[in-house]
Image 1 (cartoon, rainbow, N blue to C red):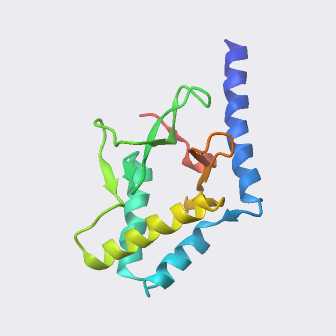
Image 2 (tube, helix red, strand yellow):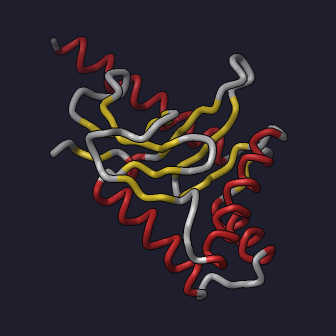
Image 3 (spheres, rainbow, N blue to C red):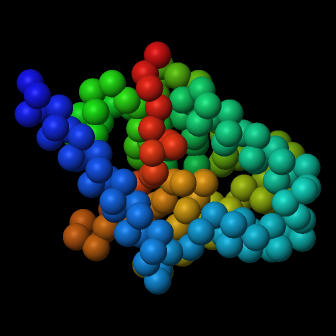
Length: 164
């Protein structure tokens, strides 16, 4: 049993090591740069109501382990046995879970917020398709695997949540 716990711990360190490696890579786009571009495109700032709504939404999702619905995928929180059997980690899914609430960062009835969400989703996907690793939320990075051509998600320790 002790060996199994060490193996799980080694796997989680590998995930965090990959996060650190990406943060230091030349093709890394940080959250501030991503959002500054999106906000500029929408002619609003970090102090705008639209950005505050966006920020409050994703913070609520991370705090409560809610799914985050984006244009092309959903970020969900689940156990990944490669990391730990008792921690929830961000994972990518094609559909939202039927067992948990979700935050919609794909569509809005508010025209200005919808424009922002469209710009945000389209811009980070465009960057990923160009080979960039993009921090779409603080400490959460998406990139396309060179081996499989599929989206991957990495995160730092602050995004690992205890179940319960």
